[in-house]
Length: 167
Image (tube, rainbow, N blue to C red; front, top):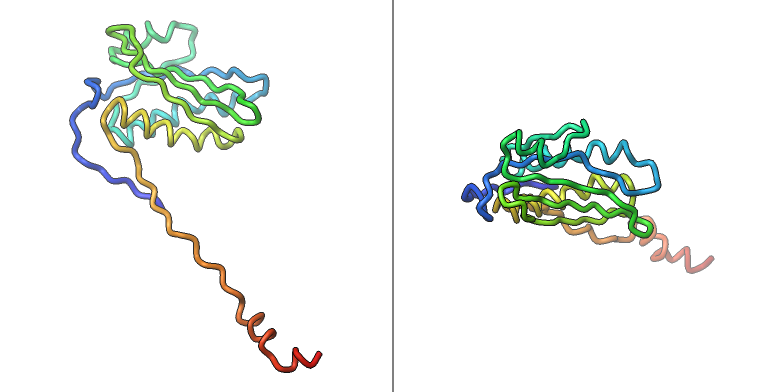
């Protein structure tokens, strides 16, 4: 079970408007994971829109420099990401650039154990980005504690049976 708590927050924690461009992610692995990497910008965009109410521009992979494309879109921030092999798992790294100053606005990292886990880890990244750049607390996940393991009634009856003791 998971739920999102929303609280009124200022337009931005770090002084950034909730407007960001996301460039296509790059794969730095020898393995073919292009299909997974290609959907990451869209997934991250939808999560930033949902969590922070961000206005997100997805930049096309048309060969144009991401900085120039983001400036044309008139957004203050540019997010660029890479996925690389890290031991047996993967590293998802993103950097956010303040386009007005050209300086870094933040760097965010998540580790994934499998290719399928890369997508799951975007939830972690989007929560950190929302909080650090836009001052919006991410989703809070509530889970019920695991139920205690109890012996089945049939097993308890069998061990308590006097007949079992005779055999």
